[in-house]
Image 1 (tube, rainbow, N blue to C red):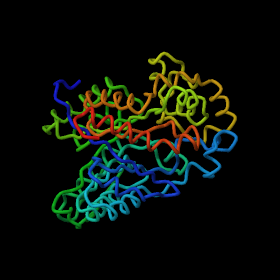
Image 2: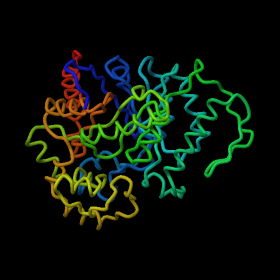
Image 3: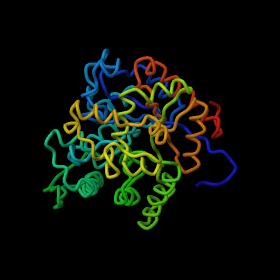
Length: 381
């Protein structure tokens, strides 16, 4: 934990959903100076199972026929770059399986020039739901990821034809002669929580954010691992930006009681590791060995299996893994993560998945929680 009595002013992140219908109407607020950065995801498939994305289970299905109407995250990032002037733009995150590192290197440079040097390439090793259904090779994703970073940096730093003979990628007199904006390549943020990925982040990243559920204590432990690896590699550990999503349920007691009964909110447990839920005092319907987001393959969850899964979910188990409470209470919770080292939080209200009425109020609740956090950390709200 970080000590000291002086508050540290914290700026949260703004989040742009890269799904249809695309809404960029609030970019002026995102670029107002209130936010540290603008974050965008890059998915083919959502983690909300389409087998229960029907009016029988959620009224969200009455306004969108599918939860998987994703657009290209990097293309949207380019549009955001052209529509803003001062706030950094971060992909959280692009995987290195679907996108070749040479193309990632070129696209990142392109958006960096479009944005005047504000683009941050957030990358990770990938998740099954975006990879397996499309026939991409998901073997050894972390090793592939580490090599991809090497290729990206070679292309950014090279001054002529580049040769590289790796396990996954091969370059033969390859060129990327477009120079970085003002001579500085885009920063790289790495998303991941596994021991190997934490080490890779420490050796290579300018920023880090964990994946999956995490408590303030485990956030502090993982950040320490990242910074220790940076120190061993001769890098400045404190130069690595510590970021992260804080996924929560925002509402009063009555609202939260309704949220945890909603099928799509119950389905959140598909993203939670079995051992994490066990440590919180509950049994996971898929067993202690379930790896959460890394195990989820939508093809393996037809309607019957999902209905059976939902029937086994103990609603109170959601409260054990999701911070919950009023906006003021959530602000206090996120302050606990800030005390653990988190510098750039994105507060994500999962309660919006409980239905249209909850979704309509979600943005205002997040804003109020941000106001509380900013005040707690020395800002003006």
